[in-house]
Length: 357
Image (cartoon, rainbow, N blue to C red; front, side, top):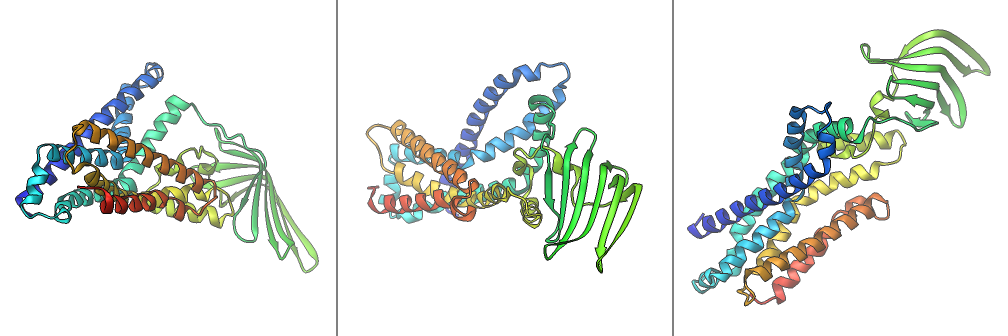
């Protein structure tokens, strides 16, 4: 790596970290201001608040990383152009394509770190962060859905009239095995209760009916330990659960939802595909950032930085819109989450061809 590459790379990475620090600091102050009423409650320990922000800061820093790398690129390049350093480089025989190399090296570093954080570090931190929010900010969650249905397999269906997630007790339970539109077996119980020591359900006042050869065999009893496809976690809050799942866990969750015939897989698919798109976003925004700021402007670097913020804002709108479309099932998630990157790739190529540098 030449001196020029190290010079630009160092400036870009240090500026990126500085921009991240400033924006995260502002967001943390705003967040503390909004939650100060919850934090001052006597039951909220200071150690938990500290841990909450240790989890919150990496999450928000990674979330804004595409925008911060773009702003850092615009700022660094505009400063270089303002000091006529870029003109000197180009006059010295350095092509614009060659000038892009240290920028793309920085994009690779940021993209790889961001992908690792998105895939594994942030979800694990979010488990703790979401637990804090549920316990101290949002309040305890109560499962209120009645007539809960689950398809355990292509032929097995489960039903619960209602479920109390505070003591893990379900009421009016039935499990039916249906083959070729014909009921083959039915297990029912007045109550089911989760036994945390055995990791099984205890069926109380149960009855099993087996239909075979034109006859019916009935057995019943007071209590029966059984393993079911449902678990207590299925009755906990699912709000923003996708944020707490690593990439392998997201894939497992998607498969689980689809195998059980439930709805809601789209939102997990969107999150999974979105994490894969973000590294590519860094390259596109760095490319655009260099193009819009590599020419010395009479308005100074302030005008170029303002333009950078405008483009960032437009990009955010594209991301939010495409995620909403994907989660709504209007467009397949894999296609929808790539829309911002595809659109801005064309914008970047157009600017590269027509914007004077």
